[in-house]
Length: 288
Image (cartoon, rainbow, N blue to C red; front, side, top):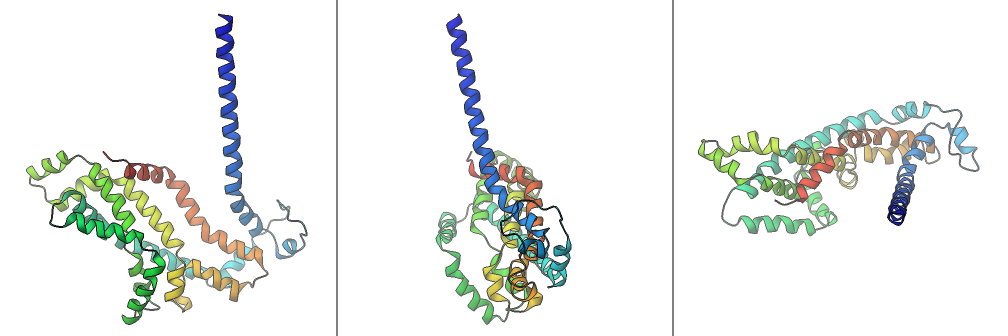
């Protein structure tokens, strides 16, 4: 009995030690991941003089200031950049949903000739790097005289094969019996999509919306390529404008204040909906 009790206690100690090691590793990794955000916020509340007087970087400040945030909105039209980005993000995400939701329903529930071949062609497009289609999109938008316009910014960013695939897989997890029962009751495909599929697929749809919002908010190459007028700049391009014509390359605290303002909406979005993101991705990746 004593030997069994000793083995049991030893097992508990080993299990506790393993758990402690895992938690220490996760804590260390969390510090590595979060440190850049901490440094960004810390630098943004340091004055220009205090920052430049630090021969050795300081990990805290005793005299924080919000002047850098005020400068971020006065040196360049950062507020205008934010409004442009909100509009670009909402329009792109809304049009994308209007396109992929019925398309995912068609591939998941309807039978038509060549469905598998068409979907295979769509999937093959995921293998093409975005850099290869940017030139084609640029030529097309230029020929349509859509440069320096919101349609030129939005339209090439609308479609996403990955989100279409994710939503299709989720629709296919919903039992066929619901669809056949709805058809027996005389329900149209559109009504079945709106009343049944969309409510049951809410976690995946929320995930797609959030990921698309993040993608649009961080978009840099295409907006930088297609716009050269300040009134169409997004926040990602506005950072470069701030660096070149606003604070200059030496005023790092003011730059960090601008970056903090730009990053804050995405950070809050992820903190509010991180559970829905995890649930939607897991549901989209499990078949059956």
